[in-house]
Image (cartoon, rainbow, N blue to C red; front, side, top):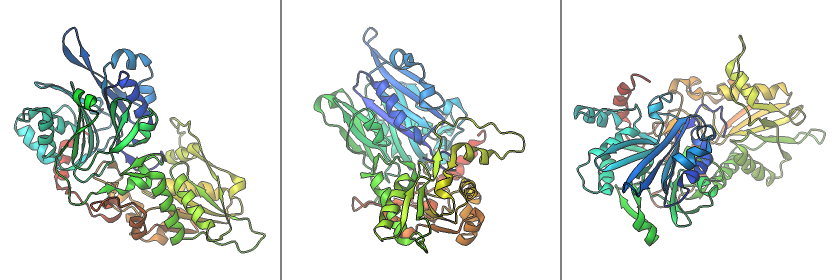
Length: 498
Ligand code: SF4
């Protein structure tokens, strides 16, 4: 993932039931999901106290990366005891990222026991529901939309926990992949459109859930299937004994609307999401791009081969797809490592007069001059959002003296923000809007020889259609939002303190 991108996935979720080292497994799972949120991390566990014959909930969460939040191993072994756990990595979308209260898992105690929740996505009727609950006397502790779900569950008049959860989520609209921990149960919930991914797996006798399957690999869990759109899966002791999960439904949308950006950029290439390997789809995107926009030709044998380079790490896989497809057309190209990314950059200290963003790019990337100098360069990248990072990157490459710089993007121009769980800049900040969709203007602004975006049609042809209901959300490229976002306008008034 390119940490300088102006878009961020907002969260990674993880859940495990029936494992003696539940917190340690969750810790590793969150490590693998770190790319989905780097602002904060947390784990909650449910522990049975035989002496008091009741359950105790343990929780530890803080700002920072997983490694620093859980830097003291005693937190996992001595504090977070219990055989079931949920975890969360956070990059805020709704609610202030700075507020400690907003860090997940969120937890409440109510007459039915303890309840903790980890959420990836965004509810879109938050304003309407929040107004109603506040009118009825509910006091909110956080400014996140996730808290709504806890209140709706706790206030439900249904008798059984699973019915309370079904009751709550039948009132909520939007995008959500959620793990809920109660005293003696673990639930996984996915919205009826299946916008965000949520995988279901098994680790020996225990059951696990995670935003992406790379979190299963790190703990050697086996992927079973996805939590289906609109499905609620319940795991408890009797499920451990039978080995078969209990499945319920809050209703399924006529067409699924998986986030297409998960395949383009957010998810790790070693993950399987929406029942397909991300690596495979990302290579396909590169291949489609090569078919649409081939690399330039060498004009003589004296000229060095055209170099196809990736922007590490976000476009590594798509670049392979582009390069392999190009080689098959007998073009004289070479895949080169022309950009080096430092993985050890922390804070950047800016001197007076220095451009902060420029310094960030320079501390993160450097060019391999010998690869770039006096050569035609094709750069493959996944997206251009604000354009500021791309411009600085191209500036860096141009300093190494290439003959030509051709930038090829494995997605169409980003023209609209995301309301379903990704943190995007405003519509006005997007370079495609600033340049009124004029690709030549964007090319000139970025200092390129040429610029090509993958067409909308090719994007749609490059992603898999596993079921008759499979479809994709493409709102940030088209402005067509598949789930009603009107309720979000009301929500903004609740974010007075953000
Ligand atoms: S708007 Fe874009 S980022 Fe958001 S869910 Fe849709 S495709 Fe994904």
